[in-house]
Image (cartoon, rainbow, N blue to C red; front, side, top):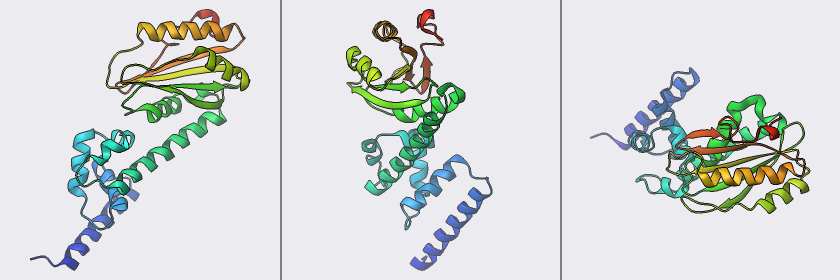
Length: 233
């Protein structure tokens, strides 16, 4: 029978090896998840839990963006562990947002795409965000405009236009998601994009793009030629 102190020694040695592999840049994804869990659950063997979570969610990214309630449904995941994952998620969100605050959004499209995915990935209901940009296409404000249901959320054109004027925005970017769906821009999405584009253009404000996150893919209305050519600068 393995004594308690011997088991603790084995776990400590295993964790030390994981940390060293991380420092050497040799950790595989599932081992990285295991190492993360050792900081959230310091007195338990977390190998089985890491395999369980990785199998269910498919990647560390999907674990981090999973809703708090979803994480808590897993055996072995307590409030402290779920909060730990959401803290990392929040730190990643802030890091990407800082890049958008400091430089034109199109200078680092990968950062913009990652920010959108971190912001809306895993959300169980639709959210509609509006990014207000200055004349150098830097982010002035990311505003959660509305939340809705699994397949619908309200968009208030007058409110978006008023906020753009209040912030002295030069340009606007729209972002929303389709939870659990592979559907790209719906007819309603295209109609509201056109309505907003016209309302903003009438005031000399550009609609730079409308992004849609569906099934972990970020679609661009600009790239799909859904915006009027006259508004694209």
